[in-house]
Image 1 (cartoon, rainbow, N blue to C red):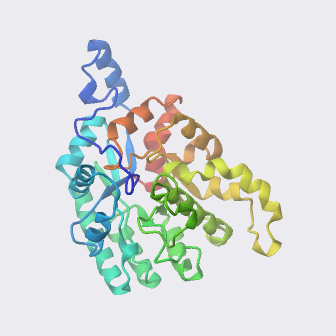
Image 2: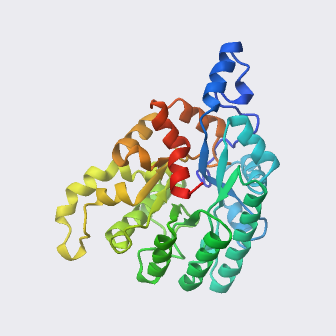
Length: 360
């Protein structure tokens, strides 16, 4: 969710990326030929939000706190609750073949009662699985988990993947102030590894704590910086906490160009020799960022950033994402189509890596 605390341009069905069906008439026959050529590239977007009215009791109160113009917020909410008409029209207009759906923030992380979290997780995952079943060529899904109760989370993870056919998990950062490197969550990582599915670590609207450096500057708290700082730090806790040493087949996916961690790899490695021996893990931090971490483009439509991320972690670990409805599908697809890559590498980013990672 790239726009939770700051105004962004919502996706509109009328928007059309260069070369999409909606803009193919521009430039006449030549434009048609270019559009047809570009349309052959399958596009899968992997961080695309939806919501269920009333599923999260706290949702309405939290939404009122979002610092965005009311007209934009209402458009977001209208599109979050729609899984057919508006969403499919937007996908068709912009040449998006498939969205991997995930429950929007605020999510289960705001629920205090573990039993309530379990019930909500089951409801959300059932709803999502039905939506995917109605449009199996257009939608796939990431499950929610009631991590307030790790044992129940393992059971729900197994059900979501094996029975409902969901492709992984998306969770919004912290579990009421707890982080996923803690020993209580080891059974969840074991099941993620066993099932071979990724955990997409996403920002949370409600922070675990308040940083004084943000005082007086609310613009820093959300997507412009605070979310990247906190989720990136959470991912580093997983690395330094030995999660991937214990579960080398597990993976985490990070949006927003990897929450900037690909651009910090050299610094992380250069300082690692100074880490106390008792706090070291088996490899340099860059090893885990290249082996256990996947990166998506959500909300960062910069070719410079894309080039840097691909150079850092490898073209096989970067996936396309829009962050619908908080970002413009037209702008995101235009950014993808115009990226300076050979067709084979562009196809990996557009769909091949998602197909492989998620088993699409």
